[in-house]
Length: 301
Ligand SMILES: *[C@@H]1O[C@H](CO)[C@@H](O)[C@H](O)[C@H]1NC(C)=O
Ligand SMILES: *[C@@H]1O[C@H](CO)[C@@H](O)[C@H](O)[C@H]1NC(C)=O
Ligand SMILES: *[C@@H]1O[C@H](CO)[C@@H](O)[C@H](O)[C@H]1NC(C)=O
Image 1 (tube, protein in one colour):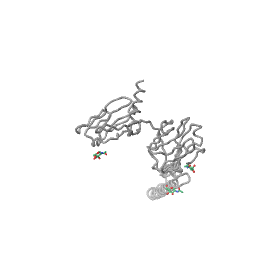
Image 2: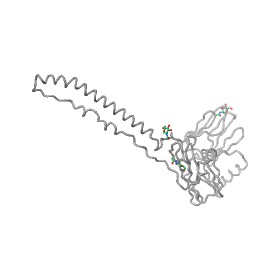
Image 3: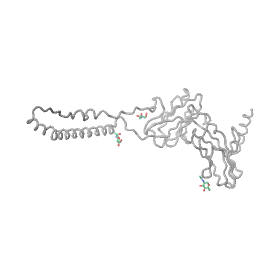
Image 4: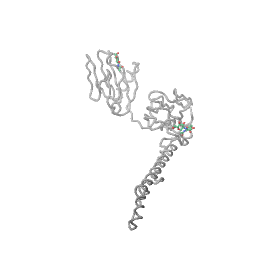
């Protein structure tokens, strides 16, 4: 009851104040709150929901914060976000109030290489529209009435399942991933009010483009290397054999003529040196492709 009342009050307050900032943060990541204290004589950061507490104050150039926060360049910094850090915050400066609604999210890590295609899974039934965000920018919005709205830079390379509203599979496919696609992806339905499941993907590293299976440059290079090593070993083998012949075998052959009873062991150079075939066993193994590939039944937008 108290909770509902509190929520109602917050909605009423928000309806009358223009400045509500919505932001999100990944679990255990640091977060810098908006609001520059150096522009205020006194400033205060409060958490207003679900619990009420003053978390930081600034007065007469003196900063005070709760333990999990620090001050950095007149800004309040959360050192490492915990799940309970989500909620509503108010920044008060010169009597002016700014509200921040902060979400703390757990993201699934995605590893992808440049030019790959990738599908970020997301499910939600009974949706009226689907929105995917990259950081805070729109990647794609798709409405039940058929209207499609790709974000800037995503035209022609993002897609959803054709019948996603029927199946509830609102997974996003990006073709030809670029370096600039790195970041956090979130999936929403119903005008960004409801989260799809799973909601958050962390595509923080777009790796360098691998050579395609048709591009033999890399394996050719390794073959060339092996060939050079093989040739070097052969030359070394020949040189050592010649030296051995000169130093050991030939003088002893001369001796043999004078003392026929002596026995000789010709060194077995083959047992010491690698045979050419042994030198070539270390070919690199082609890494298997673990990234999700694009399903066939999608609509390119
Ligand atoms: C905060 O405001 C001061 C004064 O205007 C400015 O010098 C400083 O660069 C600002 N800090 C940040 C991090 O924006
Ligand atoms: C990515 O998808 C496009 C369009 O469907 C296709 O032409 C291309 O071969 C795919 N690329 C890879 C690396 O699977
Ligand atoms: C093969 O890869 C090399 C560099 O890794 C690149 O310069 C070349 O254009 C590629 N060739 C093809 C056909 O993709």
